[in-house]
Image (cartoon, each protein chain N blue to C red):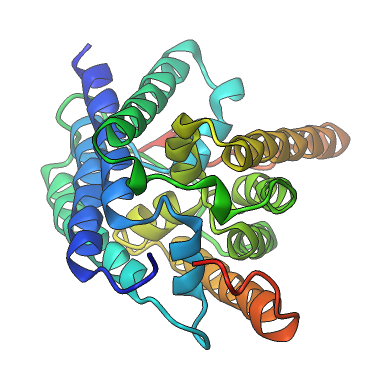
Amino acid sequence: MNHFTPVASSLGGLLLGVACSLLFVANGRILGISGILGEIPWVTADERTWRLVFLAGLLTGGFALRLVDRSTLAFASEQTAAVAIVSGLLVGFGTRLGNGCTSGHGLCGIARLSKRSIVATGVFMATGAATVFVVRHVFHLGGGVS
Amino acid sequence: MIRLAVSYLSGVLFAIGLGISGMTHPSKVLAFLDFTGAWDPSLALVMAGGLLVNFVFFRLARRRGAPLFAPAFALPAAHFVDASLVGGACLFGIGWGLGGFCPGPALVSAVTGETPVLAFVGSMLLGMTVFDAFEKRASSKTLEARPRPGLEPR
């Protein structure tokens, strides 16, 4: 599955941009998944509503993908539960501490030329790549997944 | 009402974009981060595509002065690179490199009901809750809350 998919990935990327731009142009909001999700307990009722509606849209999109082509979604074989739990904790804590993830910093923040987002994206790309390097090429674990 | 319709549509399109692009597959994300292995550059094109569209439309929106259906843009209040930003991005990157999931794709793939995906989402929510607990304790100690980004209209 992991061969280069230039057409699908470019089209998908353009669509991600359309989704971010729509939310920003129409509602003035940054499409950042970790912020939209993580701030839900702390915001006003109005704020909470649009966030929940956005997440409902995200899940609707997921169901549509599952209906049309299940192979577009993750397979259980791509991850073990132990890795999922450890990485989930790091992703949850890290995105809140760093105020954003791949969407808010990577897609929206860089487009706004936000210095914070450019730095954050550089850092998480670098530590992500370093982690993969250590796991696969130092400890020779998990490299066979494909 | 129109604002909620936009939020919903934006969520749907974002999910489909993630699915088409391949971001929903942890193995594909890890193959992108594996620069010294069998590198798959696909995700660079995902970023490029998204940034291209955002670059144009975010600029047009700012030039217009206000969003179509809201009084003002809500932009992060923080402007300086600080230890929280760098430390948080570090931890997120390590988690991303271990599991191949970032928050959006994990939520979208959760509809499969596969155990590892659900475990990731549950664990991510726990990680967010742990952060909130830490921050609450820190801010009650210093009496001065760390500025909460994200909600300052400008």
